[in-house]
Image 1: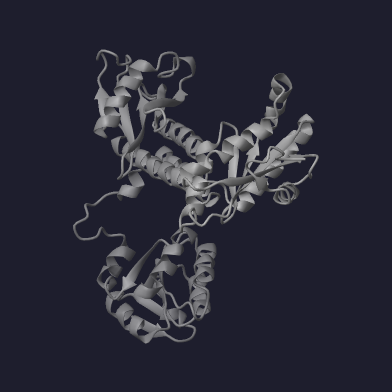
Image 2 (image 1 turned 180 degrees about the vertical axis):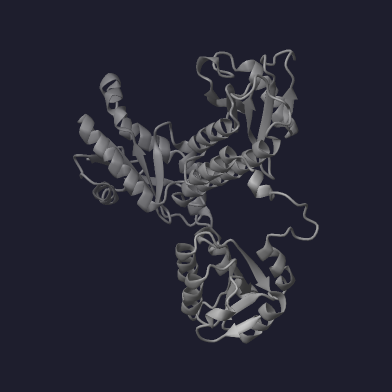
Length: 449
């Protein structure tokens, strides 16, 4: 390899390998393994040389401290679009080279461990132990590649929309003329039909039970299930069930029959693509479920499961807006324990919160306003009930909540107070303040003025 510190003599150019390198140690490796190369200390000199005579390949020894590696790669790709550009980096700079693979870099090698492979990589020779011919990445159908990109775009979606859209992407990538997907419902302990492909003739469109039965078998085993044509319960084109599973468990099943390209579906058609895409979907769905769970927990008190103060006040403001639109009342009940030495323990506030939570009826929402102060928002729809029964539903609710105190401690009693919209205020904070000023012992029937 001949080293050029400035502009090279045109007579010495042979159109071979063009190298850009400033580090002496890296230059020694390039001299050893790239015999026909020309080394330049400056990227500008290398670009001028490439303009005079097109090289067979370009090798860049990245030096992030001198010139932006991304700019150098972009300059070579812009001026020499048909010339492959390779990078050589030290181990500590490998993330930089990896980030440039999508910006025009054909490949990169980590020095010194990959130095021996440099001539073969530049020449396009297969690596030792690798069979000649196209690399595996070149054999991936474009539809599967686009589906994997589409799945990545769904990463921030909610769990069920993510599963539905992801299943449809996979079915489309597999050219399914008839297909469907089932998702496992923890609440109902069953597979629920999430999506169908093929319109009215889609699998499970009119009667999902036969396909659901096969999908349930696939769910239990966690392995692909193939029912050939003619099998009882299978569609005319056969049925392939692919589990949507990760390392933890199976979260759903994708089922497909005839493809658009052929009349029936062989058991091994697109096997790797289907399994790989289903695995990606499972991990995305699991992550979305956890994100949703963590989001719910972030708004709730860890000890009691009730809403924290700020989320509760936000919720109350939304219910006030609803009551304003419906032109009805809205009530908030504040609860606080009576001073009691017998009931005063380290965990009594948390135990009280759990008791309050257990006393909440359908449509009620509770919050932990302070360490030992709780509030409960009652739905505006309770007011019409009062007109029918002649009772104040807010007083009845306050008595019910006060009765939860002994569940936390036999010696515990509560003070309660009611604040109503719009009488006592038009914001959540105003209602809490109004209720706090009128806290009275439980035995006082006048819970509100």
